[in-house]
Image 1: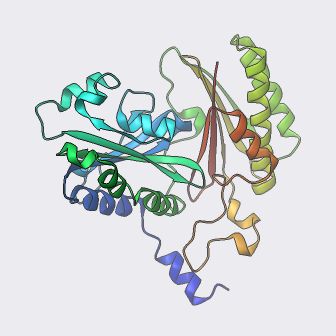
Image 2: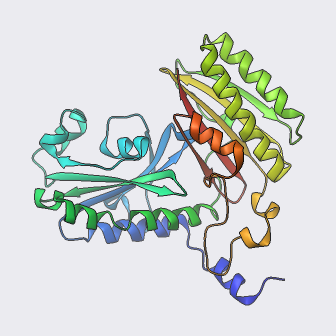
Length: 309
């Protein structure tokens, strides 16, 4: 039986919308900031779940944006690097977005990634009223709390309902190649998943080196899901504009398969989960993939990685 301290910690976990609304309210109230926004990776890293301080009231209004749109916030999520500058500085990179800001209160922009366990969970965008706030000391102070915010959002995600339907039910834009497979929760299913992906990528004309990389990373992720959950997984591979995204979504509870020392404790820390790089498998994915990450909820875990052809 859990002790009273552990029960209290679990009961005190704050829903994702509450964390997001409080963070955006605080950021937008910071002197010099007239608008704040945040985004979380979803959909195998192809889209971002977005909201902003002018979209939060009693309820938080979320929408989805394409992770590859030319925006300061999407760039900081894709690259894991901070983006900062005046409207004039950033106009060559984001002409459409900057044009919409001209004549308004925005003089400069700072966008910073939320990095949790070495992986980019999402990002924060601050629209500034003065270019003085772009000076390094002030800019650093404005983004100092982004990592802590990412950790709070991650804990909230761990207790949130799963976003979206089954992988095979998610819509696919016109012109995108897609292949889906249900993977049994058995070690023997790993080989079947490898053969399925190798066959599909070869049919799509993907070069051999990229196919080998994807198959190796896929094998490690599916093996990890089987070992930690013993549950079935969904596999989806998509090819869009030279970007090859592989996603594995399990329906197992990773938490129950860890030693007690690794589980969510009375201190409210984030449990050991796939964003931590442990063992040879995920170290390979981190080394070989262009980008990778995971999404967690009360049902299970979605791990994705990107290879560029």
